Length: 141
Ligand SMILES: [Zn+2]
Image (cartoon, rainbow, N blue to C red; front, side, top):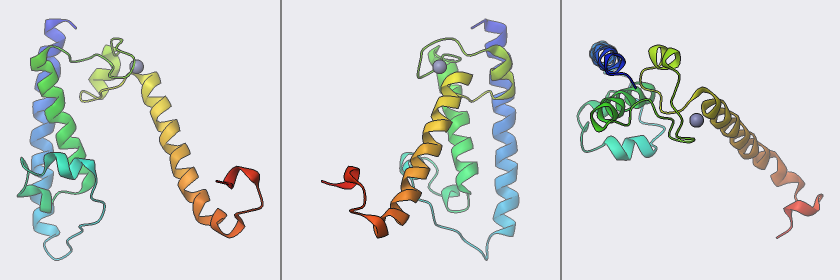
């Protein structure tokens, strides 16, 4: 990664971080009455220490985004920014400009989304198949 590009990336990450922070403040005001605590996942556990206070009012999406931004800033410091975590190739600068906190190149991202979709479908299927167990051999064992 070029130094100038890293500098730009850091600046846009810091700007994004501020924006998410502002969104959180707005949400604090509007979501006092309607607290949602569903969807505890790995992110919740990982960031619990650091973001204990705001994690109560953050939506899952905001929290994930904030963490992704923080991690991207850490990667800039560590010198590993812009390298795909899955295939270890450089992520295209165009992609990094659009998504400064991405950890995957476009093809690995597409693959991951495909897998996630497949996983969801498998989970859905299980709900239905429960009624039909025994009709196919693959369910045996
Ligand atoms: Zn990749």
